[in-house]
Length: 391
Ligand code: CMC
Image (cartoon, rainbow, N blue to C red; front, side):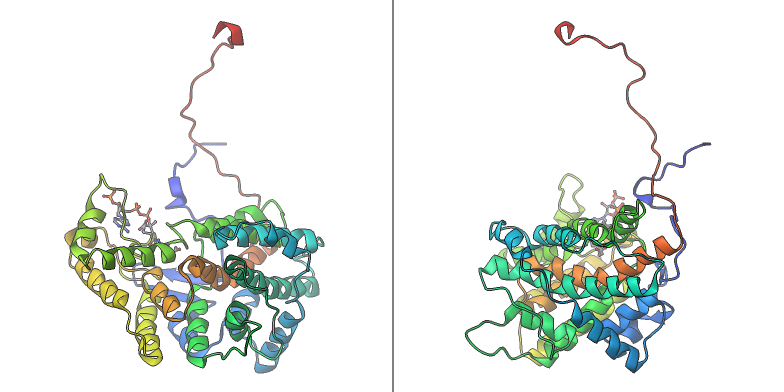
């Protein structure tokens, strides 16, 4: 088999060829299918971008409308799924519940998606996008003890997110268009990011020809960790802690630099971006706009800005090229929109779903081999077996 290249964390290994997302970490460039992230965040809708990522081209107005309608068809989730939700304690983390429910979709939709068959694939895509949104919001309804809501066919996908989350049987729920626009933008910014941990997990699981839902469920689990998607929850918890400690930003900078202390500045640093994260730039601006248009004054935003400034001026962070990443400001927006902290990573998952689907599809259509890395064995050489009574 020849010599094995040792590359922990795949820091320098290209594991696939991909037409989906272009990322230049030195220049801070991110493009989906050739379109600049700045343009997409500003001008497109989340489902439009989802279509682009998955099928390769921006849809015409008619195709987009058809896509939205087709997704609607699949937003009913089997009632028996509720039995599974009932089994969880109310205190369960929504990401754990989401991963389990996504996996459970396999049982209720056992026909596996035939990636070679266009109509089968299209149906699988619409089904996944439709059902995932509903179950994602159910994780929150469960944690609150609220009745589970159903998709409202008179409303758009992102409006439905707000409705599914927050509408109660006790009265009408008014959706704020500012909130919908902000969420649409956030979902677009999270929609794909080439071979990140959760996406490569989806590709890896899918490479054994496990089904689409099973692969996505594995992606949800990978995203949950605080070094990846879980960072957005961790950022907010960190900002709250700094606030409680009287806003002493420097103390936390010192902690982050201390190699004896496991604390890291959450929302800082990125495996690939070494100059700036273009998504963070857009989000910082959006956070300002959303807070001012909603009339929210959040002390955590001031702390975040102070922390960012202090870190950017600090030699430790400068010499390691550590900049704020996408998660640094997203939590502040989510908070302003009334989304609870433990749902932040679920928000990331809803946004990342089209990317996972697009990458799964590409991996299968490219007929990629099963993912099976090698290792450098560091264990014991051959040993003689000793019977239990002699050990
Ligand atoms: N705070 C303090 N030190 C840091 C941080 C941080 N946030 N990030 C990296 N470092 C240090 C690290 O200790 C190491 O120092 P040294 O060379 O002295 O050992 C150096 O910078 C390089 O770090 P690394 O861990 O080798 O870099 P990586 O590419 O393996 O990790 C990362 C990237 C994103 C996991 C890491 O920067 C991190 O843990 N950041 C905080 C968590 C976070 O915000 N994650 C969200 C990432 S963006 C969204 C997403 O992908 O989901």
